[in-house]
Image (tube, rainbow, N blue to C red; front, side, top):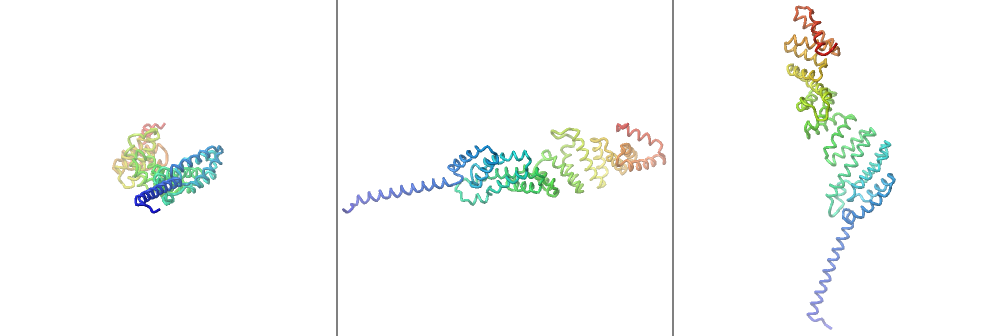
Length: 364
């Protein structure tokens, strides 16, 4: 029986409805399938977490570590990556307590090798959640493992590998808090050039109040490298802030020794430039904080001599003499020469000068 126009229209409408319904169903099905296979979907997160909960039931640390590593190898892109990494590091504690650093580093290296890098994640074609995964899971995990690896190599005295791990960590995270540890590693190697480069970066990005201890240590390295000017410049910055006060949580007696050292280096640099007035001012600060620094009294004498204060020079040399250390012999010669020049070639009365120096310094 031929279709009437009305029936034909009804059939066409029904057929169109079926096609539309099928298309919607296919889209929903495709979306659901896509959602299921995405490693960052809620569906996969629940599956991963359930599996992680099963792994946590394993009480043997080595076996649990093996299971966690196997999980990461199979599921490197997972919303629970940081949980797994933290648990894995916890499993290494027994080996750390035994100081089995070879085992610790081998296990940490194995886990590091299983973690994807950012490029791999970005090229995985994951529909949504990639940036959040990198920010919230991948980078914190990388930092955790590399920090642990750095510490283990450091404890094993393998400073070259510790530096390698720390450098990777800093390059990935750009976390400035990692720089002091990296500087310390280069000091241990020792690679003083890299140490100083990192130290300068730390100083450039923080105040002296925050980094004065780094500046002091760097100054000592500059002294070892015979770069007195750079050492004096750094110490000058520290003394600009803490010359007249003590840093928090530092004993005053200890800081007095530091101030005497700092002003001594600064004075030496200025003395070398023949600025005797400024050098005298700095050497006087040295003996303010360390009243028995015989080298400082010697150079106070030299500065006063250069500034035509011969009597003051004699008194300063006398203090160096009675302290009887490295500069005593030279100080005695200059003291006697100057004293004679002031007293018509006679040394009469010099004993009184020396006795006065002893009394002022509390020397019996």
